[in-house]
Image 1: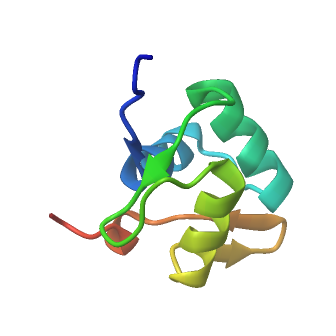
Image 2: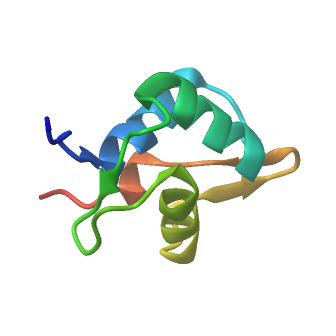
Length: 82
């Protein structure tokens, strides 16, 4: 069986920044699934093996989203630099 490499959460944050969109939780999960696939697993500097919903929950719990009037976005300053 071919093991899929886990995608770093930074790639999701970069996708968010590049889109210029404001997200809701549901729209972000949808965009993650479309871009990375339903079987994709994600990792961060302190967690691994997450699906899209778990990653969104994790990023939210770590304060990686900037709220706005229509939803949220992220910011380059919120990405760790290692």
